[in-house]
Image 1 (cartoon, helix red, strand yellow):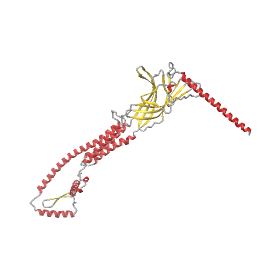
Image 2 (cartoon, helix red, strand yellow; image 1 turned 45 degrees about the vertical axis):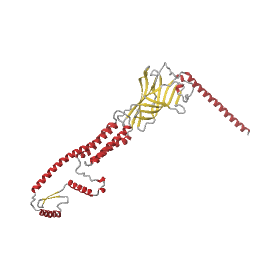
Image 3 (cartoon, one colour; image 1 turned 90 degrees about the horizontal axis):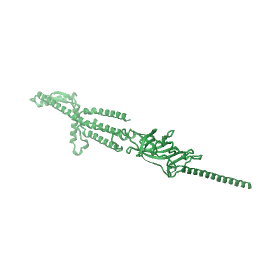
Image 4 (tube, one colour; image 1 turned 180 degrees about the vertical axis):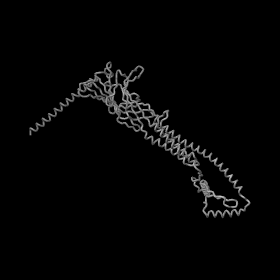
Length: 469
């Protein structure tokens, strides 16, 4: 029993001694790290770059774009959310630790303690570094003096949008990285290896996004009157390809439908004035209203877009359908006057010939009796119908039997229906069912337009989509 107690006490003492030694060892390591970080902060002036009078400082850049947001056609701007990383060598930051030194900065900027490149983004209109509980900075200091600095940045950039092909347009915007105060004799920017610009989310509600042309350039800039020179520049292009499927259902299809509705007037008789004018005017006003809605959703520009051209084409076809009705009415009325004059002249001529052949000295009773007998014989023999026109001479004999035309039959039916409608009491007449005399063949121009307008609109669509897709 005594041996067991001694064994327990020895195990406890061993564990306690091990913990104490481990704690002292960790404390010594933390102390060493703190001393190393203090030496680094005191080793140099953070306002001066490494080797200021010596070799140029190479800054290796890479970035990961989380997403593009707020692509605004009206303001011609877009927002970029990214992780931005830079790496350079600073001999003053060398240390003897066996691990990478990663200090924390709290709410402070790394430039408070070490030198960092004064990197700016070209055509940037605004931006900020994310900061929640602490600032979003990560600085790794390697034993050989290599410093890697990463942060999360959100930028607002300007881009000159070309909307001639809107909404089938593709915009190419540039993002550039360069130093604000140091020309290429001091800082040289270099893209990192293995895909330096990566994109995580490449789909937006209205655009598909692509990255291309990550290049190194050297361009001349003048930031101030006393600071001019050639600066090292890194840039890449962002391609925003608009997805126009939604515009087909919101603009193109409604406009084309209104054009097709206006063609209904070609199948109505030329005497249907109210119906034909109503269809054309309503279609035209609806198209104008739809165009206004589309324009309000677009930026204010001083040139014509592809959508404007389509809306203008649809409006033109609807206006032409209205003009066609006016032209068809004019042509139809002119032909009707000529036919009326010709028919009146032929009728008068037949009446004169008939009067010359009739002997009015015969007895009327004999004429009536002969006519009744002959009509009874003809009807019994089923030689004529009720709609046939029978002509008698002055003695009541059947002179000729003429078949009535379809037009004459329709006119007779219309006249009978009109007399029946007028014979009803005024209160029983439905106002929406007034008889309308729609007679005769459709206008020749209407018949041609039934096929000419759809063919012209089809050609317009083929040329349009072949040009802008």
